[in-house]
Amino acid sequence: MATTRRNLLKGSLLAAAPLRAARSARPVNIYQELGIRPVINCRGTHTVLGASKKWPDLDAAMAEASRSFVLLSEVQEKVGERLSKLIGTESAMVTTGAAGAIALGAYACLTGSDVKKVRQLPDLEGMKSEVVIQKVHRNGYDHAVRTAGVKIVEVETREQLEAAAGPSTAMMYFLGGTTGDWAFETPLSLEECVAVGRRAGFPVLVDAANMLPPWENIRKVAAAGAELIAISGGKHMRGPQCSGILAGRKDLIAAALLNSSPNSDSSGRPMKVGREEMVGVWLAAEKYAKLDFAALDRQYREQCEYIHNVLKKVPGLSVGYMPFEKVRKIPRVYVQWDEKAKGLTTNECVRQLLDGDPRIAVLKHEQQGIYLTMFMADPGDEKVVVRRLKEIFRG
Image (cartoon, rainbow, N blue to C red; front, side, top):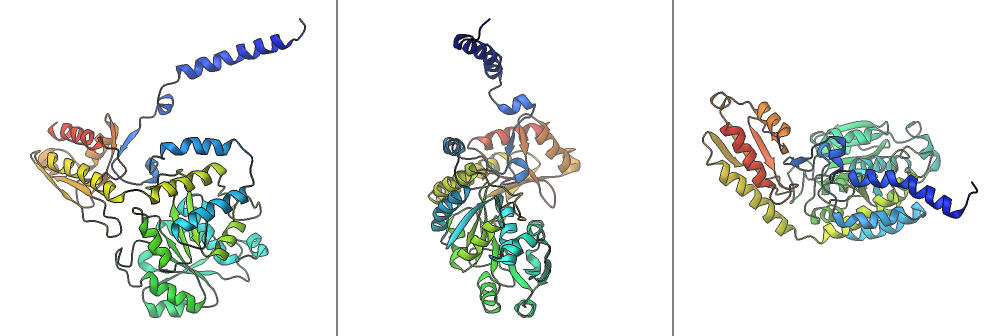
C-alpha cells in the first residue's frame, strides 16, 4: 500500500491511543503509581522528607523556561541581578541547594578567577589550603567545604582566630543563626570574624540555610559584611527542592561561576543547575521576600496551640512547648508519657505514626517522647495529627 499523508496520520493516531489510555488510567497522585504513600510533615524542613512543597504557581514558569534554548550564562547573570537586589549583595548565582553554594563558595575562595587553579582543584599544590571554622560551628554540612581538599583549622577564641589567619587561609566558614542580636550567641560574632578576615585578607562564608524564616535574616547577614552567603532555595522559601543561592562579593561570585557548570573542567561541573531551577528559585525568592511572616507565625502558633490544648486533656500525657530557636521563632509541641504505664515506647509511637494511615513523620525528643513542628505542615494537618495520636494513646 502506498504511503500517504492520511496513512501516516492514521498510524500516528493509532500509536498514540495506548499512550492516551495509559494516561487516563493513571492515579490522581503520581506516588500511588509508585506504591508510595505521602507523609504529613511534622519535622520541619528536612531534606529526607522533601523539605518543602514548591509553590504551585512556579510550575508554569518553570515549564515555560524548559521549552526554549538559552545561554545559561545569561540566565545566571540576569537572575543573579534580581536575587542580589533582594538580598542586598553585589552579586548572586543559583546553585544546587545550600550545600552546593557552600562548595562553590569554597572553590571560589581557593581559585579566584585563575582558570588554571580552577582546573587544578582538588590538587591544592601552590594554592591556599586552609579554612578556619569556630569549633562550635562544626557540622555535617561543612563536608561541602572539605570537598575542595582543604585542611580545617578549628578555633575557639579571637586570639586563636588571629593566630590561625595566615598565607594559607582561603576563607572562614561561619554557621549562620548562631550569633548576633537575631541568633544564638557563640564565642565570636559574625561582625568580629568579618573584621578579622578583612585585616588578614580572607573572606567569610556564612551558611544561612537555617536562617529562614524570615527573609530579613538574610539581609542582616549581608549588612553585617559577609563576603559570601549560602541560602537554601528548596526549604521554607519553597522554590525547587534542588535549588540554592550563593550571594556576595562580585569577584567571588564570578569565581564561583568559573568553578561551576557548564564549565566542563571544573569541580562544580557535577552540580548542574538547569534553566528551570534558575527561574524557579528567582520567582520563589521574589514571592518569599514579600510574605507576611507575622501571619505565617500566627498560623504555626495556632496549629501548635490546637495540638497542645487537645492532647493535654488525654490522661497520662505531658504536653508543652519546646524553647524557641532565637533565629527562628518556630513553635514546636512536645508530648511525653510514662512508657511503662502506657505500654508504649517512644520508638514504637514513632513507628506507628509513620506506618499508620495517614503517615505522620515526627521527631523524637532527646529525653523521652516526641515533638511536632508544624511550620511545613498544611492548615488542617494539626487535626489529623491529633486524631491519630489519640488513637495510638487510647489504644
